[in-house]
Image 1 (cartoon, rainbow, N blue to C red):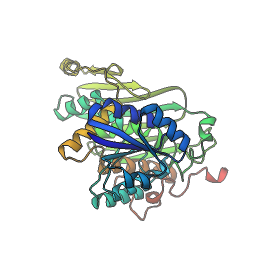
Image 2: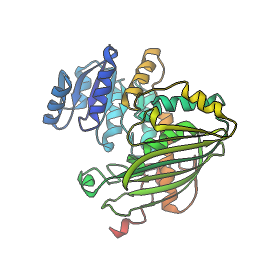
Image 3: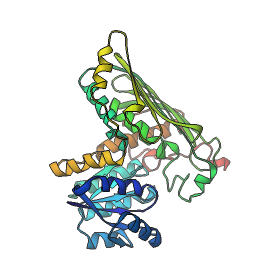
Image 4: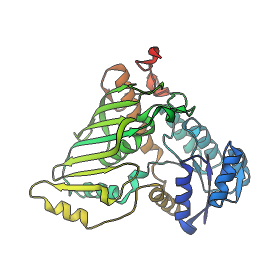
Length: 360
């Protein structure tokens, strides 16, 4: 049995604890860490965790661990992951994994010198329907990809942003592009492959934050696919939608925070009814979530492979975010590979500064 610990016992930690419990005798949650001792103790009692430690350094000192789940606010993700790598312990880090491309590259360098590996929590990649979709694309069943969209239309009121680390470039790294829509367009990127160019806009419409509260982008992919992306926390009717138009079928999913096969529809193009038949051959009621990703993570550890989502995969998604902000704030198209260390959007997603910064 492998041994795990959770650092940060806020809301998302429960999803990790539930996933660890669901993994059965493959892995055991042996300890938790939180700066709030009372919260850590209550979490440990609720989930039957035997030990609580006051800080990560103590945890790494006294526990034999296979993986640390980092569930803290975004600003602390990279420093904590670096501590784990220095101790040669694997890391499963919540989104956003870092606040900038620079921080991702720091992690990549540290990982090269460690026996530990870093995986990012992008759980929607691992739902059965998404796995099936990528396989059908690889098998040529759907034909060429043509058009796509990713819409994250959520609602967060003003009170949501009263939490000190929310709505700040320094502590959250960005607005709904970074913290909300990231799950949907990361899934889109995992399906469509390398992106090529982004033209975007971002705005602060209604929330008292330093970041955007809505962003939109038009994206061209390396294979010629054109796509739109919307990320909002201003939308009272909440939905998470992805649509892929291939030569042979349209494949769609509409859900909110997790999907099953029931949330997906396949509409064949004329003469391609076999696509729908192939899709229906495998059906699952499993909800896309942390349980799915943890199972694949453990499979990778067992086989000696690098656990997904790798830092290379993560960097592609983080570069997409940086390019979206860069395009929105400069009013220009941004190409993949354009944001290097000399670019202002490499060290911070805020880059040259949001257009509304002086209006605060």
